[in-house]
Amino acid sequence: MKNMKHILSMVLAAAAMTSLMVTGAQAADYNFTTTAPQDYYNSSSYEDVYGTQYNYGGKNVIDYQAPELEYGVQSTTMTGVMERTILPGLQGAVATNDGISGGYYGVAGSGGPLTVLTEDTDGSGSAVPPNLPTAPTYQQPTYTSVEGMAYKDGSIGTVKIPSLKINMKVWEGETAESMKKGLGHYSSTSAWDGNVSVCGHNRGSKYVIGSIKNLKQGDIITYTTIYGTRTYQVTTVQIISNTDWSYLQSTADNRITLTTCLADHPESRVLVQAVEKK
Image (cartoon, rainbow, N blue to C red; front, top):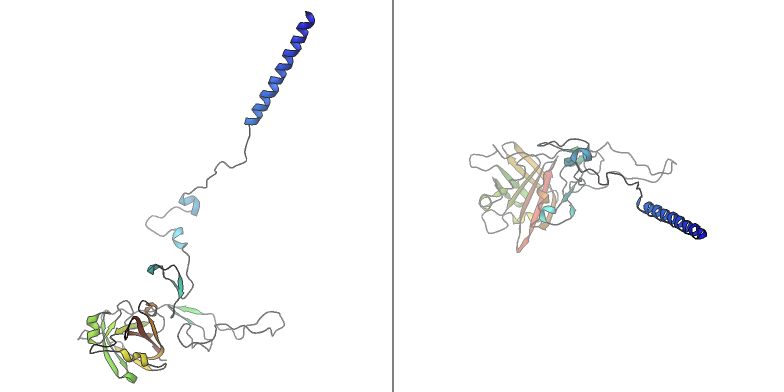
């Protein structure tokens, strides 16, 4: 009987030890730690993100983070086309003094790159640019308002093209009413300095300029206003789409742009550009 109690006591003790081991193991399974940071999500407050308080009603850091376009490139997203196109005429001029482009980059007729690298001639193992020009300087596009330019008859100027015997007054607005009396001035463009742009009928009216398609490079165009007379030389004569308005953009140099319809091709326009003769 005594032996039986001893055996029973040993069995109970072994059971108790086993129970403690299982409990310990189970406790370890559910007691774990992690090295993950407490703030799992980054702060989205303006001050934390940009390091400054938001300036209500004024400029903020985020306002200056829009991607910039390359010089002479425009986005055409306003027409719903997600693309970027090189403009035929730049919105300014860069003076290069390179002796090749005549001092203005982007003007039709210029030739040669801004910098030409030659073969290694100094033994350094790298190409050497010959006669580097002075650093290019950007010239701000210029613009003259039409206000105060009207003559007594209401016109704002006169365009003459001697080779075509064209002598027409210019009236404000690219409208049919203006073109009944001569040339219509694109109201969004300059009226004197910079790029003066006008339009006229091709046929079917008293005043027509359809013959501008026959102009040649170097032909003369004059424009007279209350500010004086400017003489331009033709640099561009071509057919463009009736939706291409890139030639009307502002420029730093003085030029005149003329457009008219192309007979039997309503989807096209005749374009002529002439740059001030120096």
